[in-house]
Length: 273
Image (cartoon, rainbow, N blue to C red; front, side, top):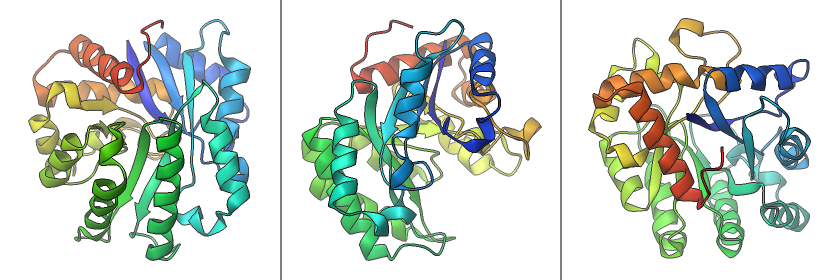
């Protein structure tokens, strides 16, 4: 079994075939999907949770979990009502994580100071609800600025919780991977691991401990190499898992077993799927 640890199931790109798309994931051996609750902004962060409520329990649908959070570039929209909404969503049993949250300095968007301030406020809510976090971190090209600031925030405001989280769609170097593991995070690899020019990322993946990794799609984006430019979907996580298995010199069954075990351990879930 495989788990897609990061998919945007509420995307409009699935509006016409969401259930059928998830049935294809089930057929591909995907037993669970973490549906990311950021929407196009805080007004839509509940949609991932609603999809879980609507589809869980249907035949041939993977077990669905949800997250909730405010994406870095949406942080200027945060007010007390948004934080109250986030807190309420994290209280729901299906909402097992806060995210994706973090820092993005690559694109022009929210001021960096605002991103850091609102990241901390979301960390406080996640800690109170005892929910691990899903981190998005993207520095400026050729720099480590966002990573440096992220680790400063996590060391001061998150390490002590012991809750850990996931470094989503990891694209950092070995130093960032090592620090993430030290903070109790799992490092998640997406479809870009399969791209021809991603050899540095594959070399890093080869150094990772088997108990420190996850796989994801980030669907509907980042389709694996053979499908690049097309809509991604959770069924395609098998292709990332295959490449990760090759780097770690294990078979695909072992990578499925290990990443599933890692996911359940992080979120204290019973393997009931």
